[in-house]
Amino acid sequence: MPRIHSFVIATVLAIMLPVDAHASIKVDVIKNPYSGSRNVPELSTNPDYIHAAGLERLITEWGGELVRPIQDIRLSAEQEQQYGAWNRMALANANFADAVREGLHENPITIGLHANCNDLLGMLSGLKYDADGNQRRVGLVFIDAHGDFNTPETTLSGMLGGMPVAVAAGHALHNIRRTTGLIEPLPMSHIVWGGVRDLDPLEAERFDKYDVQQFTVADIRELSADLKRQMQGLADRVDVIFVHIDMDVLDPDEVPGHDLAVSDGPTSRELAAAIALMFENPKTSALGIASTPAFNLDPNGISRQAALNLIEGAIRGAQARQQP
Image (cartoon, rainbow, N blue to C red; front, side):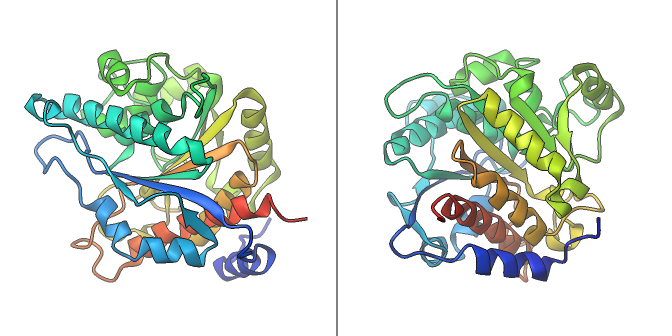
């Protein structure tokens, strides 16, 4: 199937999913700047960079309605006394989970602006219970050029950012997962990967061992039948779906300054169309955007615009649920 040109995708989104002023989509945006990375500043400026684009105004223009002011996660005074980059990141994710749950009473699309992929743990923990406290089966769609499925025993880099899906699945670093509030790991049947094309050797063995469910960059570009099957299959197995995006999944031209970019990624418009498709399913209720290069690495705003395209895609997809 030929590659769908980004202009065509943008046109389809604009024509087929018009903004209806009488049917705005409720949106809750939460920024989590704690990265858990060592030897760098503890607080990332990535979430603020997206926010500073005028996100409140843009969400309104796209047909969204913020249910409260955009939230910004910080450690409490007591938590500030704790040490350890990984531990402090986990504590911040516990606060993130609380913020996610507080917003669920409005039944919004929850959008997390994450320092990096480690912050997916807080979103998963927050979605574990509905607004009435009922436990739910949470599904994760993890879209990234990398698997982030390493453990301390398989990693080559030692980066915690290469492990969060393995941590969420209960394969490593259990204290971090539990501290975030994700007491029970995600079953492997509740995780689907997308766009992965750069695995460490032992990480690739783990992909084979667990026979992971995934869709390809081509599936994203083509909005393929396999992508639709993967999403419907996951929706059949869970109660709520979280779509997490690491910006390095995109074509490197759209993420200048990202030090982990990988060739042959989709454009942001192609991925936005796929996200819109995912959010047409009412069980898909949360989006995470991680590792957007900040202003000092993105002087022309290319990466930020790419991130905004993805957020718009989620809102447009949710709007499609209301179409006759």
